[in-house]
Image (cartoon, rainbow, N blue to C red; front, side, top):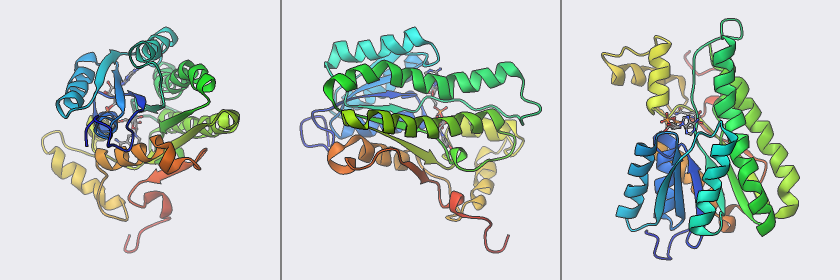
Length: 271
Ligand SMILES: NC(=O)c1ccc[n+]([C@@H]2O[C@H](COP(=O)([O-])OP(=O)(O)OC[C@H]3O[C@@H](n4cnc5c(N)ncnc54)[C@H](O)[C@@H]3O)[C@@H](O)[C@H]2O)c1
């Protein structure tokens, strides 16, 4: 499927943050493949350009924008660039994020502020920048990449879990406030998807040996009832569904785990 008019998102335009890597990259590629004109936004412009080129090579319409979501002026400039180019924004997928280790006791304030600043405040700033346009059009879909960590905690992840919990409740807040304007807000709560973010995080926690990353990552798959990790394309498929008003038009304020069953399990048989 290309941007030629047959796709599930044909005729729409979307912003994807974090589009240079991992889940954001897969989401941007999926949006583009389903016919959305796609703004690939990332703090790493080179990687965002590569994603946009991938969409164009497949016959879609995309361009890249450098954005630091944690800076209000940068978030506003990103939305302006999208509107200047495409004239409208139907959906935003907020995928930019980072992770650092630490409990509530040993996380330092700078790390706390960094994690909250990008994962929660940055996500809000992108929504704040795009909402006036969506309100004016009486239409929009906000897709926030939260985490299974929005629902349950994992060890030594305090700031990240706090930020992702905030994303979950901010999503509900926006769903309530903007439903009268036909704007939907939903949060996707992925379990582990072995992207650069996760691989570095697991290495920093000592769970994965840098000399044998594949074996280390594979060992952590046993935590999941389905005994495997997710793929970026599986998360992207849910984002496409949420971006499509035709398909998900009755869904707003929802937190959607896509996590191999881990948030459903108190413990696993045999463990
Ligand atoms: N991978 C997982 O297992 C997993 C699980 C649950 C939630 N998530 C969430 O999914 C989202 C994407 O993560 P990923 O695993 O694809 O990671 P990733 O590291 O592959 O991609 C994250 C992208 O965000 C960009 N980014 C970081 N800071 C930014 C900023 N200030 N402004 C703009 N862009 C910025 C990075 O450059 C990178 O391209 C994150 O919000 C993450 O918390 C990931």
